[in-house]
Structure formats: C-alpha cells, structure tokens
Image (cartoon, rainbow, N blue to C red; front, side, top):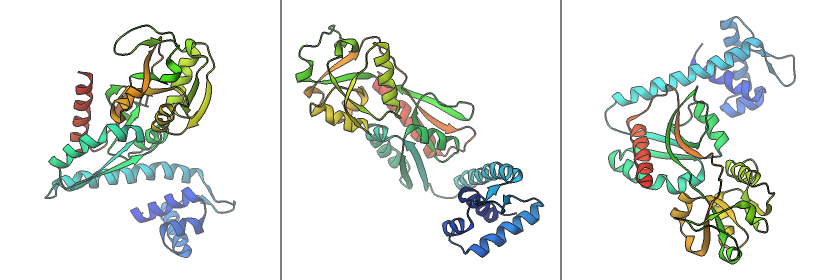
Length: 305
C-alpha cells in the first residue's frame, strides 16, 4: 500500500463513481480500477461494493476511509515539520477566516509578518464560520480565526477579542428614539425600536442568530426590510437609510462612516461572539504561524487597552 493508492481510494470514496474519480485524479478509468483492485488484494478485504449503483463503501471501506485520512494528515504534518530543517525561510502560511475578519485583522499583521519572513507566502481562505470550524478540525489551515464556541476536544484555542456589538441606525430614523445617555454610546432597548425597519444577514449566519437572540430577549419580532450575505453590505445598506442593523464596533472603526449614523449600545445585550484563533490539536506550528498568532494576540491587546 502506498500514498498514491490511498489517494485514489479516497477520491473514489468521495465520488463513488470510477469515471468521475478518474477524471478528478487525471488518470484513465482502467488504471484507477487496477490500482483499487491491487489495494484490495493487498489488504485482503473489499473496500467498495461494486454491486450497487452508485458504489458503496463496505464496513472495511468505511474504517479504511477514516484511518487513511488520518494517515495522510500525519504524513503531511511530518513533511511540513521537516521543512524547518531546510536552508532558507520559505514557506506558505494558510489562514482560514471569515471575510469580515480579513478586512480589519489581517492587513497590519501580514505586513509585519512579511518583514520578518519575506520568503513566506500568505494565503487567505475566506469562508463561513461553520465551514471554517470543520476544516480547521481537519487540519486544512495553519491557523483559523472564528467566533466561539468550537470543539475544544480536537482544537487548540487562543482567545483574542470579543466583539463589541452596537446598533447602527440611520440618523433620520433615530431622531425620536428614546435612549439613556452613556459613554461611549447611548444605551437603547430593542423593545423601543419596534417601528424601525432592519437590515440583517442571512438566517444561517452567526450574526443573524445573535440578532434574533437579542430580539427574543426584548420580546419583539423585527421587520427585516433587507437581507444580505455580508455584514459590510448590511453596513452599506444602513448608511443608505434602508434600516437599522446590528454590527461589530471593530468593523465600524475600520471602515469608517460612523458620523453618518447614530450608534447605540444595546440594553441587556445577549453576546456570544468571542473571537479566537484555532488550530487542530497536535498540529505542527511553523515559526511564521506562531509569529502570526503572536501578532494577532498583541493587536487584540492593543485594541483592549
């Protein structure tokens, strides 16, 4: 059994179709069939049930799939750890994070990282939080930035900063809203915002879930005038006067425009957006990945202070 055979079997397990797997691998179907048959003969068990359409994994195949994925991961980790012994400091730092975090967290630390490790390429994989959590647990990134909670049984967690949530309201809509004077922003209760239209991200997103928790705590059902994918779009729609929206203060500070809107702190706010850096437990951490984590934690400490 060799790495190529394992990769072929994993591709077939993913597609459950010899033609599609061969096309994905860039080989001819007969060559793939021969490799899989040789692997099964060597192991002495059938991995795939060819009597079904599409193919199905046997019990042995299901076990092989789990263990083979782990084996390839360990092989990749060994190769990457050995790179440190090579001359020169070239490498590739892969960071998984939501687009919002890429907007305000990454530019400054990337510049500093490249000053210290000029030969390192920084690759950003932007995706939704659920996908990032899953792929971080699979070891697909050097480090990942997500909101908590995460599965700490398989992930190492370094908290960096909580989101400070504020309600942004177009000034024309905020004129008659009752609020309590406070610093840095007036305090408002969502139950006093019943007549406002709202802008929100989609229902599957963490920000929407947080918004709905706050609405439930205030015992009212908001009117969603516009729904979008990203919080930056929600911010832009709010600035255009479409409706109020719940946003992280960190975003507002970065992209500006706060003087065009009325910003409020929510009374009895329900918060659940602690931010953290996560890595797969036991994952090899390169010197430049460790430095990136150091820069991110220092940056968060500077914001707090």
